[in-house]
Amino acid sequence: MSAPLTAGPRGFSRRTLLAASAAGLAVLATGCTSPAADEREKVTGRQADELSAQVAVQEAVVSAFVAAGAADPALAGEVADLAAQADAQLARLRAAAPGSSTSAAASSAGAPPAPETRAWLRGQVATAAASHAAACVGQSGARAALLGSIAAGLAGQDARLA
Amino acid sequence: MADETSGSGTLDEATENAALAEVLAAEHTAIWGYGVVGAALPAESQALASASEIAHRDARDRVITLLAGRGVDPVGAAGGYALPFPVLSPTDAAALAVVLEDGVAAAWVRVLDQAAEAGTRELAVGSLTATEIRAVGWRGLAGQPTVTSAFPGLPEQ
Image (tube, rainbow over all chains, first blue to last red; front, side, top):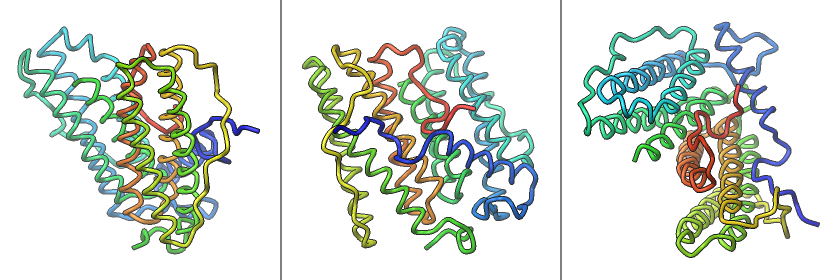
């Protein structure tokens, strides 16, 4: 008898992780750990600060897409789906780090004109991916899963932009 | 060194090992699946399938070594697997490769969610990233309209 070809974890569904992640994010949203909350989702002050820093990193990515689009309108249309994904990533990061504030330093006004715009954007995306990946290692639970997933997503964007 | 949040919580070596066992099963599945993928691809696309299979073999071996070092018996490959759809063309093969990579991505995200050790998270995020980069290539070959994913391995909200 053959096993079903589902490469995901056995006994684990995507829904399970969603529930686990939601539990962790709920704790972060309220800023406390209720008795019913999963003990593992407790966040240290250092982890909270580092997560807020990654919100700023993602804000810079979103700004980079805007700047690149202004510098090269043809590129803007080509990467509209990537920009939308970056926006979604930022929204989910902000939900996980509700204490974070918009960074004034997030603006990416330095996009060069075409044909250098694409390479510049790739650099911005790749830098953010590496930053999220490094920060992921210092987090745990749902926060680590979210940062790691976003890091991988941005690395995939970098590959597409290549 | 175990994560500081795990001392009184539920993240420990047991949760980490369980997640690693799941990722090992996913890597076994991917290795088997790439045999099917390769068989349905033309010669010019064989290199990508071969490189993908080798990457999964390497990941499998790293996880086996990690678990064995902890005295955990690594899960073996199943004798066979049921394909999710018939693989009758190069496009089907690329679509199967996407299924394989996405499944492995979910397993590595699970490791990130369950790991107690920073070193294990480092392994997981690196493996997850490599998986997503391969998936981007396969989604393109499969003709999927969107080749990137905002949240590889995580459910969409």
